[in-house]
Length: 309
Ligand SMILES: [Zn+2]
Image (cartoon, rainbow, N blue to C red; front, top):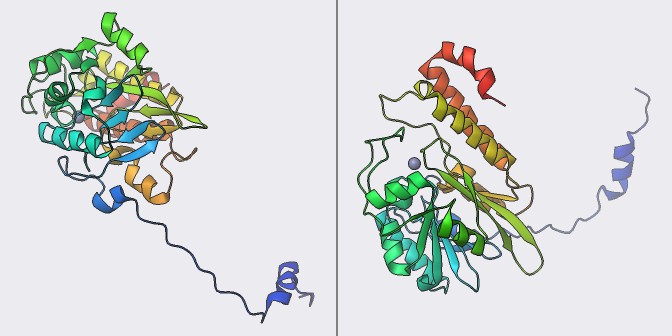
């Protein structure tokens, strides 16, 4: 022992014994959506709509996302929820003060009934055109599962939509251009899965939002991803596309897929650095690895190095 005081203690000495004013910490007000909704909540449970950033609004239920992007020349709505959930989506749009009749373009994530089961209802209520992937459009027009879907046969039929255009040609492409929405095809969870990106702006600043589709490897009991090499290769490409996307803010069709509730509790959903498409991709890729390992560990050993880029 040198007998000397450590420097930090010397600095603190003048404060010892001094009367410190009480520190009052204002509790952060609970976000209304956090108060109303749980993580992985019910698909058809109503939750309050709220502004995500700029012209981008959350209008979904507690368990299933629906995103409204507003503009003077018409609004864009991504995903409907289930058929029952679509009523909540319409009510949420109205309660924000917007008219569903001003929605001109309907987009979707993937062609499962929990995300597009209410599309026919939304199309009737808004008169908007639907733009999707070819398989997404085909599924919504028929109301039936696509045979290439790993979950084929597991879902109830949906009410068919009146019309739906593919995103990559003709009027579909023109509409995306007009409403400044950029498609990111991300097949894997379903063959027609789509992610979307756009710029959300307030008066002073714009942020790039990515609505990254589900990338979970879920299937019927008889399906093995390793038996579908081409499909699996597209799945890995989709993961890379999401990770590579310019991404200030990531949203997902199941809000808890990108920890929306936790981020709202922590403060600003749109804060730079609070969101990461790469983080989302890594968690989904980890689940895919676990799934493939379960299907066949030997296959994993032989093939994975080519699959992971
Ligand atoms: Zn799904």
